[in-house]
Length: 261
Image 1 (spheres, rainbow, N blue to C red):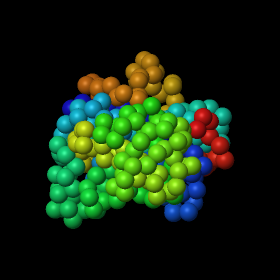
Image 2 (cartoon, rainbow, N blue to C red):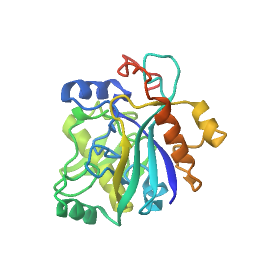
Image 3 (tube, rainbow, N blue to C red):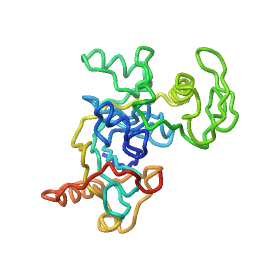
Image 4 (tube, helix red, strand yellow):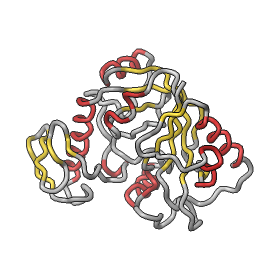
């Protein structure tokens, strides 16, 4: 069994996401994209290559475990930047493409996870998201998404002019741009993992500090491109964080502004 540490951007990371939380009642620490990568609200939480392409999901096999943390921010009303431990998953089924994953979920009478790119599984509307697209990326099928990129949607080509977000684009076109980006990713790397939920906390997940990392790893490990751990280090971290948060008073998460957004 191999263990991994991975970070993601939760819905509460920016103003658009906080509006979605208040309007639609989402837990603050679900993923913020229109495809929920990972989808931690599924009965079998799911991981795909929509975010990291070939750098992570293709490496996972059944029995591997993954701890999901937020990116580092000042998530509460303290001034210190830290991570939050949101979920601890074990890979249950590994699929080579999204079509086979969708068939498995349907066979088991389960709702499709939002990150499963099946034809009958649309993305979430923009007002349910943090309303941003990945930066510095080139789509393998549609072309470049930044700058004046020409992006092909089901309704024909459209031109995108904003460098940093899709908020300035008409909502319908913006969602098509974002979802096309993910469709291209799924075509390039179809790996899809259905996971057993070992633990999660989507409302007030416990804090993880540099001190916690150093106590277990003797350094702060790289998190953007997940390293593989074979000696139970991630299990030790998860157990340390969960035991430390017992009885700890919760801090308010939804601040008016949180660190670098």
